[in-house]
Length: 149
Image 1 (cartoon, rainbow, N blue to C red):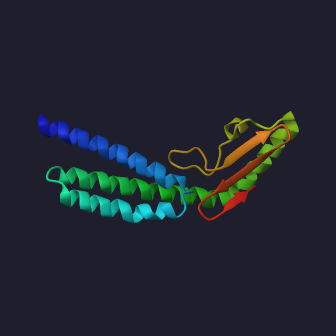
Image 2 (cartoon, rainbow, N blue to C red):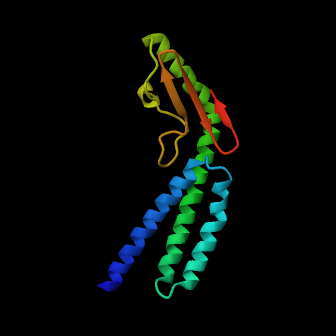
Image 3 (cartoon, rainbow, N blue to C red):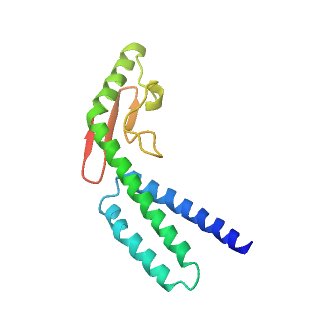
């Protein structure tokens, strides 16, 4: 029974580490810090696994899935970024059209009632939106640039 509980605990830690890595990678806006994770996570995993007297496999598994989550999140952000470059102006046009028909800007992008582009795994869209009675701003950003639509 002790072995089963250790396996369950290791899988829970690994799952949490994966989601943490995914959330970090999906941000895409941390700049150089994002790339530090590429080196720190594998090195820290290796050192911790070597220094540990017990649970080396669990430590290695946790570090591996954390790194996998980070890479998957970065990949999802890059794909969403490329889609936004192509489709961001379409969302802007939909906001302008909504303003013409209702004379108000939507409070949130989700209120447009359309399928939003630029989806990540955990985020509905990487687009940032701010509106008030005078106008709106729609943009996206990463570590290198900010693009306004």
